[in-house]
Image (cartoon, rainbow, N blue to C red; front, side, top):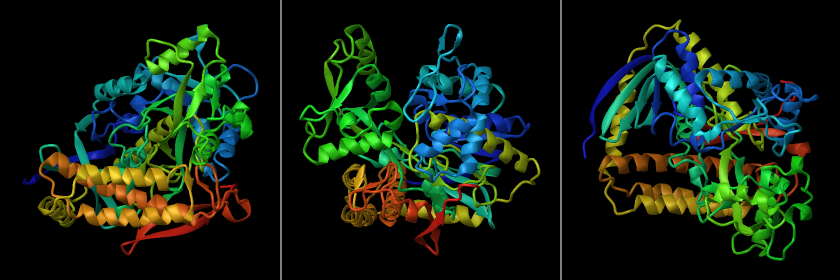
Length: 544
């Protein structure tokens, strides 16, 4: 297997990621009459977390009842985030959300309506109904956005895995990537935007799109950017099946009369004091459910979502989620990896610490703190995608063409050739599944010092085993590269979770079960310093 001689593509603004954040950034950047390339491993607008999502996002100012405002929305977000959000970012998101509704309408997105007005959903953690929903879930947002971006001249480059961010001096100057045919491509850009999503696929149970392996986190880390809050991984409480790809909207179902029960028939929400819908956030419910399962009050590795309290005529909502031909009285559900609150550190302009590198969407940290409430994922991607695209284009319009970083291209080519030349019999699929099991059982909803330390050792052992993998084609080479990224991100999660000696939001440690505001109103940052993974704690400034 030979890597083909690199080809070079020049552009003003390069966007990496084909979900809502990447599309919004590309559309915004194109307003500046510049060359914009949107680079994606999957088809742009498809096979990403936005496309497979429920398509709901929060926006204050839509509801016609009295009381809601960006300030109330901000308070809800920080309360749910257990007080360690970056307040600057939350203010920007909550004040910028409503405009995104009108922008999407301009792109051709149709929203659900009721009596001629936009239909609003109430979700746990929100004080007021403020979630608007696309008529066909997430794909009803990304497909029109893709069509609009193409119509205004955004160039799509699909099927390419980015393996390296390239620098000229201290400035990010583009990326190197490889396609499924072994063609190496160097994209030179005046400004680069990371919009690569999260890392739910680190876990054995995940409802994320296939390929969501934390590539953006690893790319940013390896080039020297800081990441924050990587201990906070959100698990959606009620998912179906061995690998939990399908989720149930527990907030909607519980409000209609469904009950989550353990093997003793106990009502879990009542038992843990989270019966009130506003308190029924994902962190609290996932924690309660996994405690029941861990203490042998589960039904196998699940609990029962009991529908017998829902009137028969309302059971069609169950049919909608299960696609079954009958209306069951109960289904077995358990948590699944859903969202990373942590990610690359950005400021209010979506700038990272590295000159010329911007970031938007789930790849960033700070907005959600220790726990995200429903609807805020898409709101974040759209608001900060807008800002990243505008700021990156503004910078690019003032820049001259950047010279090619030939030495870094050569070094990355050598690294890829080394991966190809490995000799050994380790199986990539088996290594990946081993990592997923380690992360699920030892770095999942319930954690402690021993499980986290054990996971770290297993991750290091898997990294050594990866050196004994011999890719036989370009698909396997991409898989090996992504597994390396997964190991890097998994190590981050373990290290940071070990350092946080308390429980907060989505991070629950049985050896430190209480939230400790006296010592831990802090965020933990991780960066690569002299080749080592280094941590530092930073106090939360509620006034910033």
